[in-house]
Image (cartoon, rainbow, N blue to C red):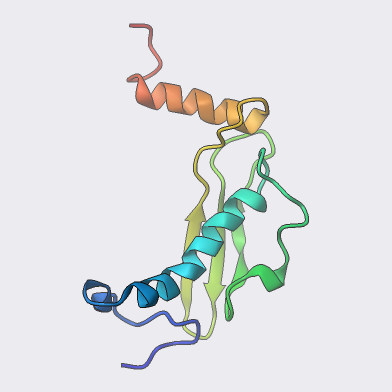
Length: 121
């Protein structure tokens, strides 16, 4: 079975029997994309120097669609591998630094989701 550039196979069946090294090689692009959702979007982890196009996995480019509100909320980036017509939507998780608006919004959302709607007990 032919593997597209970037090492992403056409099927995920190999994950049932692959070595640890093969698993890490497969997962590395997705892990980097997820890291970029923290460092290349607004929030306490934002680092304007962290993102440049050389930071992307080989063969991947940043997509045009993103969710990156400065005032807090869900953050996600899209990535495209044009030669295979594959795409990834990588979502950022919780911002644990509640000193900024991003962390405050996530703290509020976590409270609402964790306590059954944010209603007093």
